[in-house]
Image 1: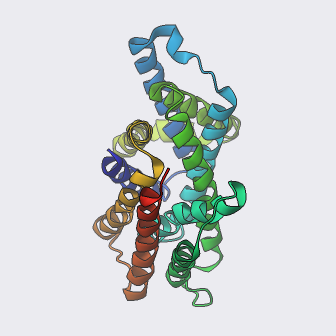
Image 2: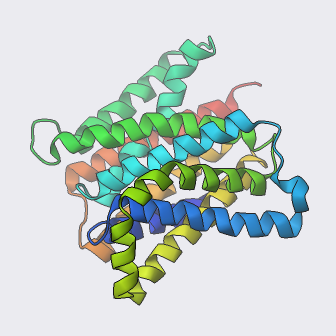
Image 3: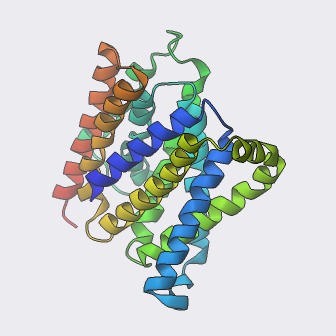
Length: 283
């Protein structure tokens, strides 16, 4: 389930990057969350009735929706200015960041090996970015911020996965994202009218596809977290780097250079080893 989710996320990112060259970020993101809200409203109503829309953890549902919408916005702007594979690799540093923060937030003993893996992951990120090389410029700050936000999103998702029904959680995420973007959408209403006036079937299909990929992908992610621990699942999330590199090559004719691959492999190895240590650690 987690590998399927990473494939869907990579496909959604590729479609989003492509559409970013033709329309505004607000239109793409608002459509993505509005489609999700509509799909999940139908599913929840059909399967669970009115009770399915009730949540016992409204604050966390709202926070999760806010974090997810923030990640989407940061990702959109990042992918318009840097390759998909490198962006994905930086985002995937979040499990390593979670481990680094656990000693401070949860008063856990991290140990020398874990600290080594944390620094190895950050070194991999530095190799991907290569400050001063002029490869990506200031835009690398955006995925770094998105990585921090993604860490908080993962923690809240893993917690809500065992507390709430996954369909309910997905519905609230869609509604929160749609409502947050609605004021901006009203300001840029002209773009929507111009888009509808042109009636470009291909781009309209991609908008619908992005909404469906995001809905199904995050739904599967929640369901996976409800069946296995975060530590057990984290090694498999690094499949997203491979999927992103493949789609970047197929759709955008871009492949990471030698040092880019080295940095991404260091990030994946550090995260995977960290997760393996978490699995071995006695509960």
